[in-house]
Image (tube, rainbow, N blue to C red; front, side):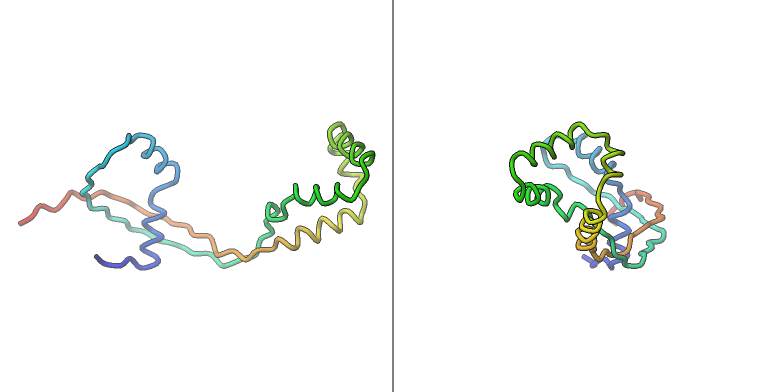
Length: 134
């Protein structure tokens, strides 16, 4: 079997959307299915430039909150929880101190992650009739 080149591999992967693959999987029950088909994929694969991105979820906000709360006494923790549950979100955001904003920015900066360029594909996929043995 011929090894696919990187552009061919990406074209094949991009030729079926995740939604279509999930729909096809839901349509099948348990079992073994024989497949014999020829697929023709033609088009262009474009790979974008690598970039950096801050991924906030990497900061683990719950661990940060737990660490901050562990440094406070019980009364202060209760007051913070009460304020967080009852405060107007816009007013709460406006009242955050500059030091807190700077600390949040340092945490965000630590999540800077190099990412590979996005892959886009404009493809035409056709299923060719199976070749009959001669």
